[in-house]
Image (cartoon, rainbow, N blue to C red):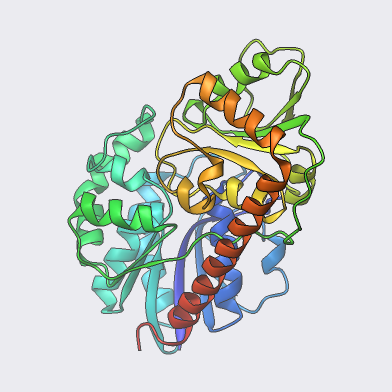
Length: 366
């Protein structure tokens, strides 16, 4: 029995910057390929993720070429040609038992499910579809491409959420928000993102280097830079997108680093001062798994990725963030104990993740 996965794109993270959601999808594809006959249909193929190179699955190459960084020709091909050509391929797959769609393949997966009569599962890792359909106000300005996509896809996306046989989310917080936004009673299970890092015992001798992963204003870069002014004797490392600001002398921009171990070895403390409700917070979970303390905004799914109140900051006030950093500095042993408690909870999340993946691979759709 085969599972069909309609992916937005496949890319090699060592060569192409990818989002946290794409990293999580890569891990899920690896775990499904270990358990069942898996057919992957990517809209865009920019390379094979290293974790999939030695796995057994069937890759169905895209029907049209897209150079790295080039926009998919969204409306003429993605919504029409892709659907009909994919349908022909699906009908040649022996014993298919379900279709899994993700954010940008939601309308396609829903259409194909209705045409074939196969069960339909929908992966929701962020709020793009919620914002696209107007069921949740956007935090950032929606691009012209997304607004056009909304015009064509809004009704179908809402129907997909209401009629999905299964919704897979990143966190309990995102599951609750999704049910409320789309007024859906579809079955929902949580697959917390899995850090692809070794678990390391925490040891805090000092905090002199502070790390931050930047991806737009909502991640809290203004607060990060303000804290760099407050702690001029610390080095502040920014990873990911450029900060696009006048930088203090103690701020270092490192760009995109695909090696996650290298990234988390760089700093003694990581910050996630998000101004919005993060669906989960992969960076926080990775830092804690690697034995590093992290401070997060007390909102959204961050309370699940950093599951100890010592690491929560309840406001955007610089003073409160400064005081929390000083608290960690003054109480290293308590900080280490809190990291260990978080690692225990992340281990429980990992067990639940594998239980749910086993059910998805072996039982769903039968």
